[in-house]
Image (cartoon, rainbow, N blue to C red):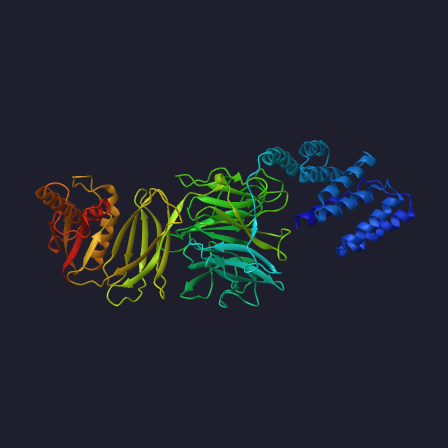
Length: 628
């Protein structure tokens, strides 16, 4: 659309100041081009205009119109030559022709000449409408000249015929485990979702997504999937339940199928245009595009966060740190929860939409965006980038020459500087310990350093499956709970590691019963000491919640050590540690008659004390249900 608009912008100079012709024959050829242009028959229009120029080589109008036709077809070198010829005929030329010449010089990487003509354009009168864009191009010239001298590695690979077809495919989205891909395919002008699974080191042939989401009446597209693959947010336009022309919808996965999608509603959606959602890895913040009032100009990136009452909070503009007076689109927040990728034509770049990334600092503020560089970005429009959870590869869509037809989906290696922070994930199934049946249960993952919840959701009600992303470098509490069951506690300390070594676990939880035992793996003490460390508080609070929800339950708190050192000292240490937990619970208004505590030293190991890993498991705090 932008090229077509600027094409007519260049044509406007034809009838303003440009020089005509005294040759009726040349004029006849010139007028013959008009109906061809209306039909987008550029080849016939070119032939007519070249015939006019052959009759009268100084026919400036014909040169300018021909340059515009070349530009509309992205024949930038030919367009540049035609504009230069037109301007050389006479000094009395429309400012638009000078502007478009500068733009074509920019497109063909002649940055010094482009700057010369943009400055020439800015010195003219009556150009206020385009002065702002010309000034931006001057900045882009300096950026692009440097970027081309320092290219990044870039080797896009077509995803192949299992994904791509003779139709157009675009807007890929990927689960954190890299096993499920959903994208948009347009068939006979109807947009639907298709999906493919990665098995045996290749992608299966894509199939249509659920008919609960795909429709024959509406278009579905511009989607994002939560890292665990359970929530699909997408754009739906012109629907009966819409608030504006385009709104954001969500569907929840139910076993092997998807639930009926519903409008996310206000305040995410409005009377204006909302599209291109991106969900944070914890599922609590939704990023999206909107042209609603209150933005910086055009289409901006906004966000909404779920409040304590489980409703979407007010839409907040990301501000000048991300948005510009121009357009931003296709946001994608990586599984690290910190790195935002998006497209913009407002930041320094190659003139049109480029892909940028920005990282969130510890205060939650995004830093100045960085262009991904050349040749990932070019004079064409680049958008729709997603990045795999391991940060090594990206997916995007384009109509490159080696495609199968229309837009195709490609993958490429992400430059080192643009890679997100390292993450891992825990993936598994929750089952009943006795029946071995899957259980719908709540999964919580809490960063013990920041005390922030990085994941809080339920397992799939049919399969019992879950997937939670955890950035490398954190120390995480992992908790599984379900009504009528003892909770399960685990600790993941991710000092090093990567997505290639995720945690795959099968969790068995047992119903609340006398004698039931839970190991509290997130209770921490310094070596040979019994003062509770601050990182223990979250686990203790979960224990308090359990006791408050099950007021009939009495427990014994038990302390355990490894076998290193004196047995009597270990027994005393374990008793003091159990007492520390007991005292904390009393301070939090748990009745003393429901609690006892005991220290067992090294007498009840659950692992081999011959290894450090075994000794670590034996150093633990647990509780046993003594009465129901």
